[in-house]
Length: 250
Image (cartoon, rainbow, N blue to C red; front, side, top):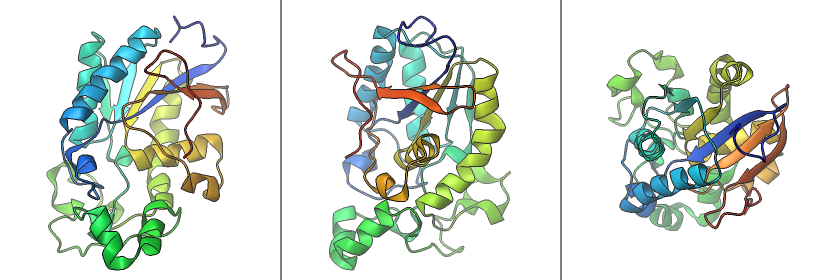
């Protein structure tokens, strides 16, 4: 980043990236914390994201990501493509996708037909509405997954609204990511559509209504320049064509 003429030296750089398309993205299924892998297109998107970063001379010192393989594999692809496999990677469940509760694994179109488009739209896009919760006896409950064995089961969700996802992400932002940025390290965060929507809501101080229309595309790096209070001075998506694009809200 320090090599990019568009980055001011008195500002802190931050790059956010949503993982490439997963096999359940492709199948139009609610994914949440289900640990599905990248689709073929998602692998390609990871390579393309790395090429965009290389082309525009962006670099970073550390990567933060979730504990889900679609994010981790995206990180691996980018680091290999950029010859940065030696960089540290920190994983946290707090960067996981929003937990979709009992909807996880269901087809989105079929769910809309069963429950009605308006209700499913609220489950998907509202800031505070939660989808139907899992039961703790359900095999999909994260408490049965060994990757969460060190997490207090009271913190593991049965379902989440987007507000819930932001509430469990912010302690990691304030306690780990923000201090790393303030230390002068160049940070890449590779996470999920809704965990990044939540973080962008916080960074840009978006209203709940504007958040409904905020879309984070897969595989397109979003570059922030933050002031010394870690408030955005500028942000934009990198463009596959080479020209910086405005932040997407659609």
